[in-house]
Amino acid sequence: YLDAPGGSTANGTRLQIYDRNTNAWQVWHLPDGGTTPPPGSCTPRLGSGEYDTPVTFGGKTYQVRVHVPQRAAGARLPLVLDLHGSQSTGPGQLTYSNLAPTADANGFVVAAPTGVVPSGSGYIWNVPDVTPSGTRDDVAFLRQVIDTLTDAACLDSRRIYATGYSGGGRMTSALGCRLSDKIAAIAPVAGLRAGRPDPADGTRPDPANCTPSRALPVIAFHGQQDGTNPYNGGGDATAWRYSVPVAQQRWASLNGCTAGPAVTHVATHVQRSAYSACRGGADVVLYTISDGGHTWPNSPYDNGNGKVTHEIDANSVMWSFFQQHPLA
Image (cartoon, rainbow, N blue to C red; front, top):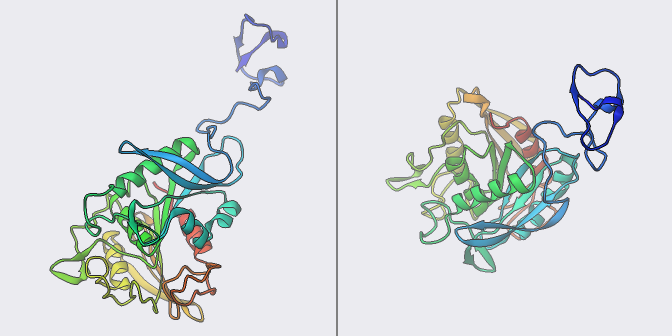
């Protein structure tokens, strides 16, 4: 330990090194009176609260809505990307998902960016090989969002997660396919995919369109009465041909799962199916809501797209899953 002889605070005092004893002057202090932070800690530039913060990508600056909880000094926090559905915005999604109270209770940052392709009263995401080309590369953009906030908000790079609703669920799935080096686990809501539909057979995923660099933990939520992204497949030919269970099976195959699906009924209208014994513990879990519409489980808002179940809370369930699956 470094010692200032006699407790001197004068400039130019010679320091000496030896084993620490009980002398109070052998403990270092910062100018604000705090002790030296532990290795790996940092001081965030973004304070607690909910506001927009700039992210620069491709020569342009975009405003990203963030919600930052209170934190202990020097602590690095997890991040959950919260991606909006088609014809919506980041702030609208943060309201609809109601993730902020869960973030405050569990100490993680939420980032809710906005797509760039205008659609209706909002925007859509540029999902690879689904959305017409010639617009912003949203996989690269969301990578930049993560990198920018990792520095500005002092994030824990091992605990970066993504969720999203509808078109944002499809974009979340695409991030799992293409950004598994950054994202530890994903939780699509009403939007689980495993790549685009196979052009030769739309009832299955295109095997060349989703090639994650590692086994990726997946948890998903979907209503069987969803008329926008039908649980049993069909719908939009470029984005939604194969069924949700087929998407789950494909992720289980990608993750090398050897057990499952184990099915349990967790509530009157909610069934949980899970593949396990996967590489790296990358389980693949699906919550099916028999009477659920194109909705976010336990959202306090009725979006007019069918029944919102309150038998389970998607936010608390996905956060529990995320906590079990940091990036190795």
